[in-house]
Image 1 (cartoon, helix red, strand yellow):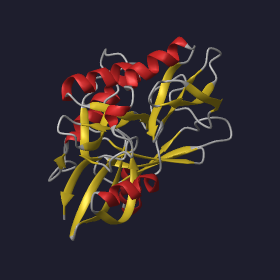
Image 2 (spheres, one colour):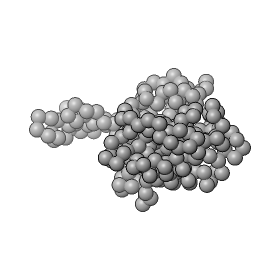
Image 3 (tube, one colour):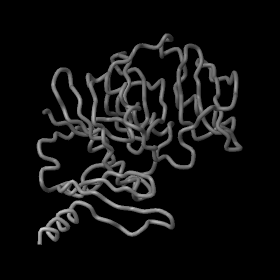
Image 4 (cartoon, one colour):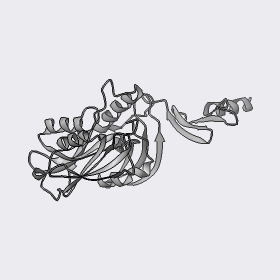
Length: 285
């Protein structure tokens, strides 16, 4: 009888599965609260099926980035973004400038969002992130001013219109560097190029092969390890991270890292987006 009870208890914790493929194996260990870890063919995947029961969300505060990430995840699952189409840099710049009345000088597509810099109506130089499907800005903060006054350079949309006339397309980066723009895009053969352009008149000064290109054939970002996001979190007064655990997105959250650390001097539990590094939720301990 005791043996049967022991086996029943172990069976509730350790669930074996059939081999995933020839020569491989797969099994899961439950934590007893709807979550656990799955070992399959040498890879480890954390899971949590108890998103809305048993306290998984108890005490958590969701940030604005949570809603942003959920919308993006839903769109990726449908091959798009909730029925909305991806906006390349010219359209995104147009949306931002129309809403803010400012002027964009730098914009780079990285980790699923646009990283933007520019001048507002008050002349303040700021940086932010922008949704590539709606152009909506978030995580807005002050930035160091450019060396060249923005009113002495041509606008990004006019700059890219000239480059499209020369056969370039699908730009993923525009950086204002003093008297030149550094622009990355594809040439007429689909090869990634880094184009140096005079920032005052739009004349091309140099074209060379680009070391990287972030749009490729799929605009969905790639998941990064938690250590990739540490430096950016430090800028927002988060530190002393430990116990980072990757959790696959389920019914209520996108893929994220659950990690403990400090916010200023307070202990905090964090959920960090695995694609953008944004704080999706927090819970002070």
